[in-house]
Length: 286
Image (cartoon, rainbow, N blue to C red; front, side, top):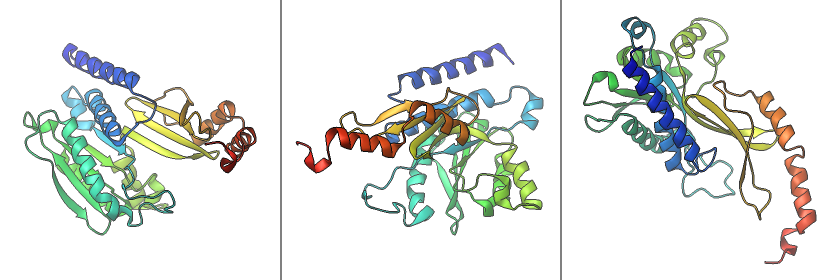
């Protein structure tokens, strides 16, 4: 590795760490901040994962996952059971704008607007390409919403992108090789084409763990985790950090164990405690 490359990667990583430290919290505070953090994380990942020598360039590709938490439509109401009744078809226009902004942010010198094409109208899968004016190897492509039925297309796009360009899978609709079938050709092919090549470039995920509102973020090179507590109306939303930053995605069991340490009382018990202390909502003074 050349001294110039080492310096470039060190500066990129340092910038990413400084931005992470100055962020307002462990999780993005707005869709705009999520996009900015995704761009910075992807830039850092690409700078550190791009091969230097010719031998590595023939065998090592930059292939990245992005899990982006698409913000709910502005017309969404609290009582809505499903904020996305139209599924991926309803999400796609929002994802289209987000992906274009991210790709344009990652490619410093764009050779024009981001281009796109539909790969599968039925499955709402699309391909986006942002070309660079400085070098073809700086072009970046992204597949949006690919699912198990797009395995052959993922392979075709991978071949088209080639070894020196970056390819992103944005909000994949699968998790494991078994999603492509318990056995047989598709299972093995998905392992080769996807799971053996891709790693995370950015992620913002949310789910319930022990009934708590749990958030995970990946900003290269580490995962971070926290729970969001909102039961105390006087305090408002509070982020509680869980596990130490790690390159490995934390397991559900590890998160649950840590939540038991930092929040011994479950959510329902804490809410009962607040009601006993402050009274029922209609009994409280305004």
